[in-house]
Length: 391
Image (cartoon, rainbow, N blue to C red; front, side, top):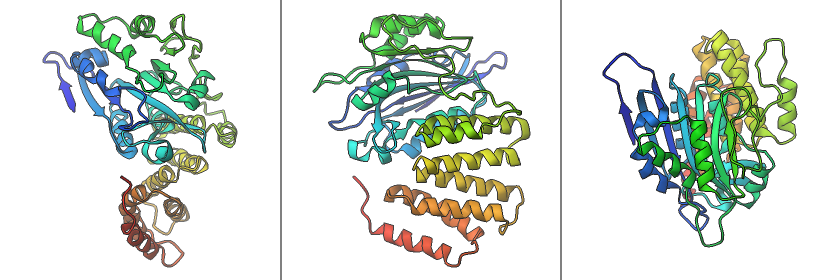
């Protein structure tokens, strides 16, 4: 659902609010996530964005992480202020030790393919100008994810305002409710428009539970006050020892160290921040921006996320071709070859099918130096057609 509110007076900045409510539609469900949407839908759009003109996009129980990523990417591309409201549940991928937001079809055994990797979200937000993005969270974590959150291994990256609550798993045979966000909606429906820091303090005081982690990272120096029951206040810059893309600093060692120690979300966020700086300074398609796009593609490979790596390598190849580089240029061929290799590593037939058309178009334009590459794609597509879709 998309709602647009426009002012009839002077020209105003349009803000964007993305409401994402998701939880598994099976016994893995820990929270009644979508129950908050009617309350938020009754709020004037301008209250959700803090701007006189507003666009609101609602995602209720989405099933496909690629679709969610596309919606986030589209919202993040909007030039005005962006506010994300996310309610749902966090799980930890035991293989990669990465946090994921569960979606409607997520089960413990399909987590890596049916849930949204949290670093996908933070990576898209890192591309925005600092201090133009706000994230409001009302989440429940499963047992393993809860340990990581309690240990401070959770955030949304530098330059993003963050308010929210992460609760531990509810008692067995019961589901949590997004009471923290419902408090926001109740206050807004009564016509009050306090600053988000005040809303957070009131919601944290009312919502509980006592052992929840309340997050508050404001736009000014330091953090805004958090509720007394919060055991883990989050510092203003909770990820990345390299938080400023200074031209005299070399971020590559810090990025590599983070990736090699398994902190893949942190590594991706730092690289995305440097890419954002390159885009602002040198422009889209510049050698500097292309370099960081390819760094992110390789970081996705290191994180064992071949689908994301394939997408990024295809984007890099397309950007080089758009700059006028020849199809037999070494950098163009290398980007397509790497995209093809990552696509071959995909174990999820549905994801492989989804990327096959784009890869085929790119491979037709850039056949590469190894004969039979295009035919190899065709053979795998034919094989995938015989693999039933996962229910």
